[in-house]
Length: 166
Ligand code: MG
Image (cartoon, rainbow, N blue to C red):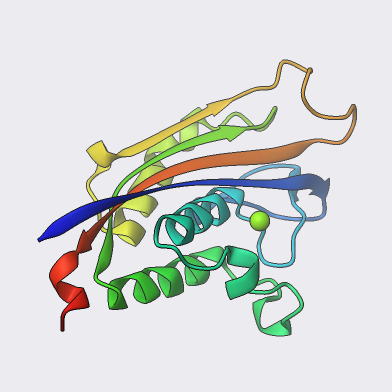
């Protein structure tokens, strides 16, 4: 027997000089990068939080605390793979994700293919079940001269209900 689980995630990171910009595990050429304890990959953080939420587990900050030096500058792809393993032990796998990114620059559409390809590989789901789009704020969302990246993620997970019995 199988059932579907649904979760929603949000993340935001300031964009500053002197940091690299990772989105969905892909480094994007940019003058500004995401400030954070890990590599600041807002897309993956929102995705992880949505997945944990859908599974009834504690959030990303509880699972991977930023007070733990183990997670300093860690690639968020590692956090996602660790999350995937935790879910798998509960008989839960990714089925579909839908992601919206909000930022003013750089323009992300040239990188959609590369980011989606990486998500396909990381989540082990086909491209047609990965939604990805970016929107600009038109100057009405962020504080002037305080650029940031916001990621919103919806996930659908598939749970093997037989796994609970074993
Ligand atoms: Mg984050």
